[in-house]
Amino acid sequence: MRIPDAAVLRAPHLRGARALFTTRDGGVGEAPFDTLNLALHVGDDEGTVLQNRARIAQLMGAPLAAVEQVHSARVATLPPQGELPLVQADALVTRRRDTALMIMVADCLPVLLVDEQTPVIGAAHAGRRGLLDGILENTVRAMEEQGAVPGRIRASIGPSICGRCYEVPQEMQDDAAARLPASSSRTGWGTPALDLRAGAVQALLAAGLVREGILAEAPCTREDPRFFSYRRAARTGRIAGVIRLQ
Ligand SMILES: [Zn+2]
Image 1 (cartoon, helix red, strand yellow):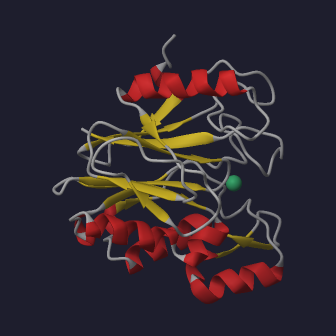
Image 2: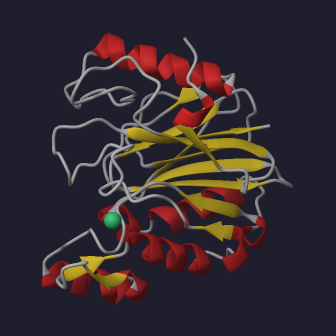
Image 3: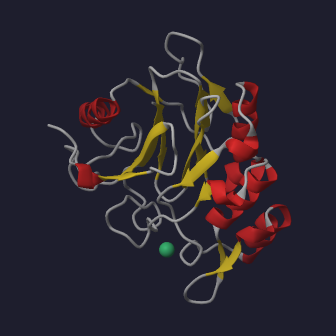
């Protein structure tokens, strides 16, 4: 079985890479993980998750590299050859063409990046904690170490919770705003909230990207039932951002 084309959101903005964001569609899982959950350790059947990942690998035409995501600011750069050992990190970077990078989320931001000229790619999981601790700046720096020039990097922020849905206590908003003022927002019902996408754009600009290189338009995971959302249902699966050099 192949994943239907309509079940993924492509990111053609990321020239030089095959990049996409998955939805819930196209997998073999059952509720509440229906159907394309890609994360182990969320309570889904392991065989089901591995089947789903195999479908993504088939779609990308390459094996997937992933990390144990822990809301850190650590970036793992793939070794020149062989598999990446399972490490705790929240972003991946590589110049290799034989492996696709996968990062998993359910409301947090999946951020895919490419410098077509070097070429080098990156994939980052940016939640509130990681974003404030510098996961995106660190990802850009790791790409620079592989030869990237920040002003050439194109980034795409995928399906994630929007600034009108991500309600947080006032104190948490103040803490985030002290570091990334753009992240401050209000919910649709008037309470303190965080716009992590706006915060991510600010962090990427600070890291040297240009505004035209950043695409931050994607559906809201909490509002759009095509995606898993932790805020909508704590027991749920994970979608993924996946990228491979062409
Ligand atoms: Zn929303």
